[in-house]
Amino acid sequence: MKRFACQSCEQPLFFENTHCDQCYAVLGYMPETATLAAMQPQDSGLWKTVHDCHDQPRAFCANHNYNVCNWLLAPFQHNGGFCFACQFNRVIPNLNIPGNMDRWRKLEVAKHRLFYTILRLKLPIKNRLQDPQNGLAFDFLDDPVDGSLPIMTGHNNGIITIATKEADDAHRERMRVEMGEYYRTLLGHFRHEIGHYYWNVLIRDGGHLEECRTIFGDDRADYALALKKHYARVPSGNWHEDYVSLYAMSHPWEDFAETWAHYFHIVSTLETALSYDMTIGPVADGQALLTHKSDPYLHMPFDQIISAWMPLTYAVNSLNRSMGLADFYPFVLTAGVRAKLRFVHNIVRNMQQTYAA
Image (tube, rainbow, N blue to C red; front, top):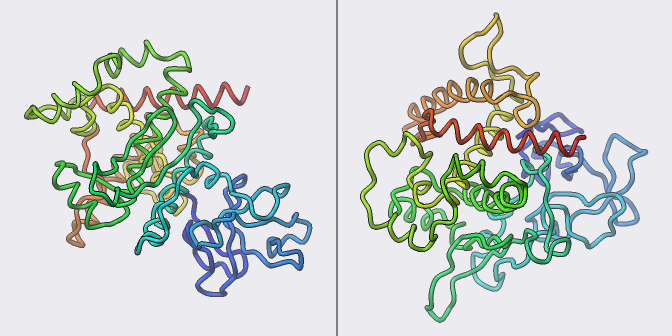
């Protein structure tokens, strides 16, 4: 994530801010330029950036009315439409249920961060109108009131279901402990499930299926049976050698999705560190490996990404421990895991070069 500052007063901002805490300027995010801009209202009901009188007026996403989205529409879009990120919503939480407004807000924060990374990586994406069979859509669902089977987070041919209850910290932490997970966050759910979507787009339909099978295993293995076996067995002590998480062992699809999510974790967090001019790590040729001139999304070679990532995780894990908190990054990137991450990196970079050409 980039570092943002208010264009009116230079106050540091977070990606999710809708108003500047210092000068109270209304803030709007422009996805095409990855800019969080201070906005001023126009008589037409539209908005313009504070410092560019020649900028075309724009409307906020319709979900701005609910205080769950700060993204602006493209200049040619009319007031009342949905922004690039919110156009993929198919079902939102039932707002008549107490607490769901806050849950939806948390879900949108995580989802918009996901779309920030998708746009920065220049990944191809289609909504359900563009591709009725496999296009991307999100369903944020509540458990049935009749006590029937609870909603499970998952992916099915482009439809990503996120259980609304995952926005409750207590529930999510309880599930993390029960499932024996090191890490469970809303953003992690989004990054994992979008990995399944991109397995369809970039692997199955992108000509990389056989290559992927040599790295992650044969995806034709019975999925339901694989999950049943996974939850019934006691994991071996050396599972870290080839898998980034315990759940990645369950099936090649899950292995790919977990690895994909971790690639998103890495490039997003590295960009944040670089934007704050962090220079943690060993020195090579007189310069620190973390340099603000690097771009992990588009230009940083894989080996440089890993060389920068490892000392960064040690530093931040140490900071967390100094505060009595759990490790920021409780994972081990062994040679086997790095080979899988390199595969994901190469697929993404090859796609970027193909679309650039």
